[in-house]
Image (tube, rainbow, N blue to C red; front, side):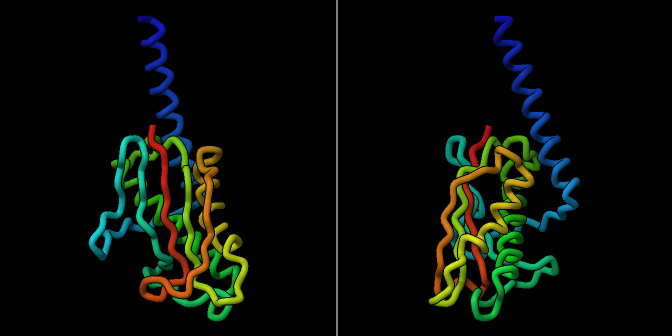
Length: 172
């Protein structure tokens, strides 16, 4: 019985440490999370199944709330695409925070990101674009932010946005 009590205490401490680490990291990086936007279609923004948190595709929206539109390789550079993907990553964190009732310590690990890049036919640097979200998730969540990933080219995305990314997290 005593060992069980200690295990519970350790889990509580670890959970508190994660919450402080993730929230402190956001502050340390001077990140302003955007408001988690509700879905505009016939779907939900997030869904928890067992201990997995699925986050629907987050589109590229600027700090000013404007859509980041265009085709990478024609209208936007790789660097601009990277920033657009980073904005998607911020929205993913915002959605995760809402799904976890404001408590990011519920996040155990990021399992996977799937990134879609609105790009020209001859554009081949989709991974460099999606690194914007991957780098952000890893910066905020540390080892827990290391994930698997797909970076896919597409000829069009909703509303003409440059990037859309969805995510899967494991919860404690």
